[in-house]
Length: 455
Image 1 (cartoon, rainbow, N blue to C red):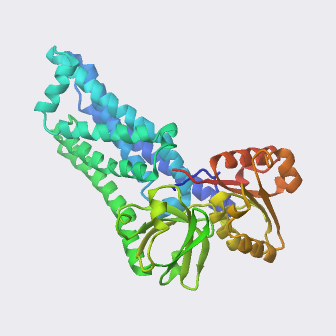
Image 2: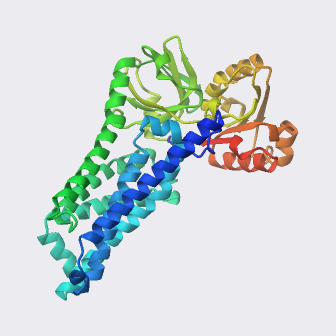
Image 3: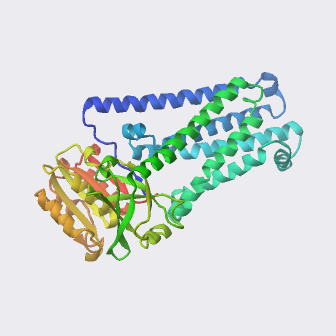
């Protein structure tokens, strides 16, 4: 079970903090734009009027320009999800992922255009057919075969990321395919240095391009590999218990050292890697269902795939590596002292931890949506936490027809919706309805915080 946050921008704790965040985003955007301009300038500088006027010259130039630009944007995409702590804190992981998705199609278009235009340009130059020239390039030019493999990996990753395809794809498959993108980048890099007109015979440009790629690789290794390994080794997490909460839903309790130093807030999640046979090689995102307490930490998982099915059979004593915490679906994002927490199904997981972390002075209303009574997880815990805060708890049990979650229904349950921050976590259909209804009832945009379980 994966996830993608689509929360609205978090409410700032002060105007100065908000301004610093906006400045940081503006500076980062400007830096990316300047870098892209430099890449385009490099491609233009490597061409001559004579080459452009030759047969196939224009197509070849445009192909080189597309290839450099596409490769540069691929690096930007990698950096957006490199888990750089200060970037995550300033921008927010949900916004970074959204940018990553919005940007994702353009490198693919550019790299496909690069392969097509280069082949077309060389075919015009040699007065040969397109397919014949494609074979000549693969058979005769160094690292072109590697570039073709890279192109295929990129196209497959792009295809599996299409919304309609992604809905029918297991998270394990999606994750593995995207892991191969790092191989695709390495192959593309070697191809560019071997054949790129901007680098052959241009040692300074070659050195700067190499530095950019190595720096990107170093950042990914530091924050996606080294830091999680060091942190996991320090905390020494191990599974100490597995408890069935409902049919197909289980909680995993882990013990460890100095868990208070994890700096986790209610509503956040980690990437979890269970170091057991068949599971160690992949990490999955799971929210905490309770804050760390007495050296223990808990997550709750619904069996939706091979990985989550296997975790329900995990043995006590299994070591666990974590990466995070991530997410701004937290109490720090609220802009009001009144909140509405809406959970559907296993979406109660981060809602329960968020409620636990909420200041006791906050006016809390909790709305739980479930098809059957036994689907309501942590009923006693939720009631206790709500009662301690003097809040209200509504359980809506039954079909969508019985509880449509429209304006009339929500206005009846929460008449002061316009004064509340609204936190929603659950299936996409539930989230969309609640968010639309909250907006219609006057809830401020900055106060709507939505987290979906998807990938």
